Length: 201
Image (cartoon, rainbow, N blue to C red; front, side, top):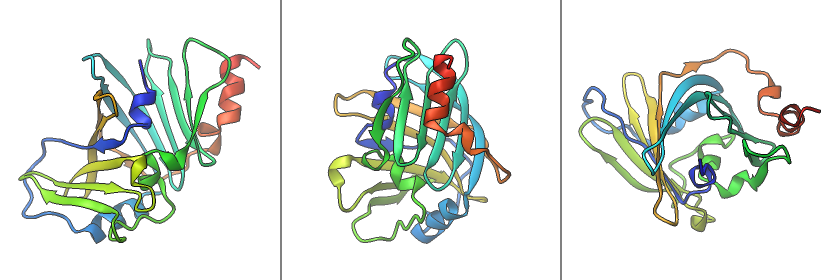
C-alpha cells in the first residue's frame, strides 16, 4: 500500500452521509472542536485509489501526535510525533521513512492551537446539505497542500477524509465514532521506540 500518498498529499478531504443540519458550522465552532480535542481513539476504514480496503485504529494526542495502526494482514504503521511523520514499511526493518510533519496536511489539525479564521487559511467554507465542508491550507506555505474537512453537527464531529495527491491518486479515510478523553501513553507515538520494537531490538 502506497501510504506515503495519504499523508504527503496536497489535498485532504472529508465526506460522510449523516443527518441533515440546519446550517453550516462556523469556523470558530470548528476551531473550538479541534482545540478541545486532546486525546481520541477510534476505528477507521481506508479505501485506496485502486479500490483496496484496509482497516485499523486511529489514536490522536494533540498537539502533534497521531498514530494509524492497521489491522492484519496489513502491517504498516504511521506515526506523527516530535514534528516528524514516520511511515513504517512492512517489508523492511531498516527504520521508517520520515518527513517533516509541518509539510503535511496533518499539521493543520494537529497544531497546538487551531485557528481556522486566520487570514488566508480557509479557502472554502460551505454546507452540502448534510455537513459543513471546509478547505484549509498553511497560509505561509500553500505549496504544502490543502486539507478539505467535512463535519457533522449535534455534536460537532469530524467524520471522513479523502486525500488526492499530485499524481491524481485518491484515498478515503472513513472515521468511526471517536472516543475522546482519557490518557494515551506517549510510547504509542514514540518513533524511536517503535522503530526498535519493529526491528526486534
